[in-house]
Amino acid sequence: MTEKSSARILVLNGPNLNLLGTREPKTYGTTSLGDLEAMVKSHAATCSFSVDFRQTNNEGTLVDWIQEGGKGFAGIILNAAAYTHTSVAIHDAIAAIKTPVIEVHLSNIFKREPFRHHSYVSDVAAGVICGFGPVGYILAIDALESMLRHQS
Ligand code: CA2
Image (cartoon, rainbow, N blue to C red; front, side, top):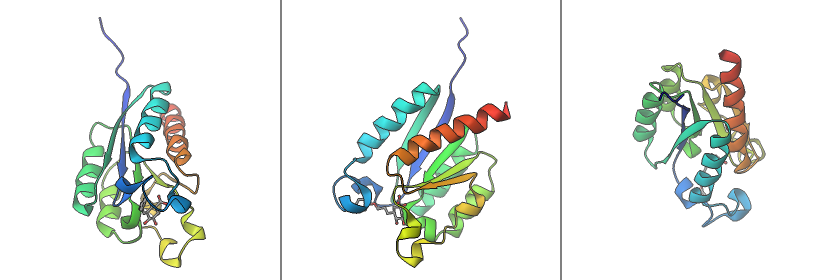
């Protein structure tokens, strides 16, 4: 029997997001990274996506994973956390792949300190979602689903 395989999406989380739900609840809420992963996987299943959900504190690892996302993944949801505001390497890695990248931030970075207002990701991302907490990841899945449906 042949089964249609579901599209794979890669959800990448950058530095300190492993601390979600443990500190700074006013800024980042009370949802843990594990809770977020469960929410993302459950919603993705309704769109027939399978999800590879990862977190790292290392810039080079994020670059390696973005390159990996360029092969065999239908889309990438990326919260590069603080590297958003500093990393030319992440910008270049995204520019080098064809896989669409949706940039997500839990907080509204434009309501925060000026150094968070610039992103090295936004101009190479397919779209940007910020300020909606964990729901932003769900919106990003829906955005990818819509983009991919219109492509095919
Ligand atoms: O709002 C977002 O999602 C950010 O990407 C989060 C980054 C921040 O540097 C960006 O400007 C915006 C920081 C992630 C740190 O996460 C923590 C979570 C709980 C406690 C402490 C840090």
